[in-house]
Length: 139
Image (tube, rainbow, N blue to C red; front, side, top):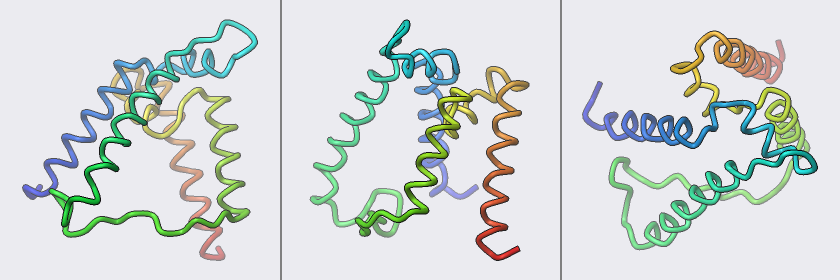
C-alpha cells in the first residue's frame, strides 16, 4: 500500500465508524426513520444533517484550493441532466434500502458487527452490480 492510499483507508474507517456509531448499520433504525406514520425514529435525519454540514464546509474550502491534498486534481460532477437510467436506478436503490434497511456503506460496515446477515446483503449487492455490468456490455 502506497503512502497516498493511507488517507483513503483512514477516511473509509472513519466513515464506517461514523455509520456504526450513528446506528446506520441497524436495519430497524433505518426502517424506523422511513415509518413516518408509526414510531418514527429521527436518528437518520441527524446523521444526514451532520453529513450535509461537513460537505457544506468542504464546498466552501474547495474553490480556494489549487488541488486536493491527496490527489492530483478535483473530480467534480459536471453533468446536470436526468436520465431514465439515473431515475430508475435511484428508485431501485430507494426500494432496496427501504426493504433491507441497508445501503452499500452501512452494509459493508455491518460486516464487522453482524457478518452473517450483512453478508447476505453485500452478496446480493455485488450480484446486482455484476448483473448491471453484464447487461450494459450486451451479455
